[in-house]
Length: 249
Image (cartoon, rainbow, N blue to C red; front, side, top):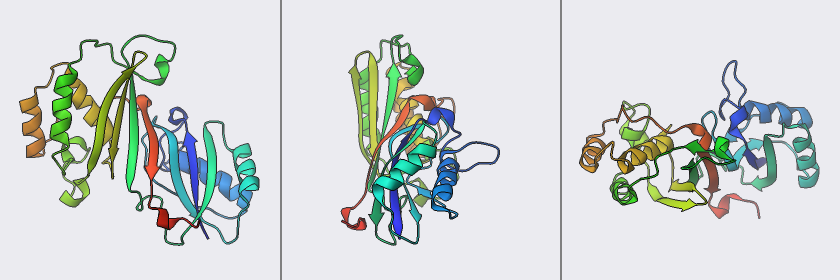
């Protein structure tokens, strides 16, 4: 039988989702705990390979097991032995071929920026520039929605064209209680793509990059090497959407 785990985690204490040598990853931590309580070697596949320091309010992963699992009992056992930085919120029975990574319809990330010093500044990225031109950022977002190849925002410009193609559904900016909330939704993201898009938009907003320069780089599929990506600690994976027909309801 195949199961989906719905979970959340604080990425501050891990080297990212994927298993790495000599580093503590979220995937490895969950696999060890699952293998312990189920008394069988368990391997999980995550919906997204989040970087070190990235947080998740909602994340999914799938695994296979030979018998029916009782939801309440399972959740009680797994959360008892997991570190407090990871919470398994639900376990869901799915179709045998359902895939937590490849069946995703959309992924929703949110980035949080402090523009003033505050008591929760350590959770978000501190960006002390108050005079941000959101009109310029809005124009940059309009240009971003017109492209499909996002290699300019990935880490490897030499990847095949098909790998670089993404569909950007939404990119919005809101300010609330002295915090900027940036929500970005797409069918998929390249490695580091979210953080580089936000970094470029911020540079445009404070006029370190002009719109024409930005447009020419994106259209020519060149990477803006002098524009660093924003830090991981302000990034949250908020929601993942799947087609309903993969679940055993």
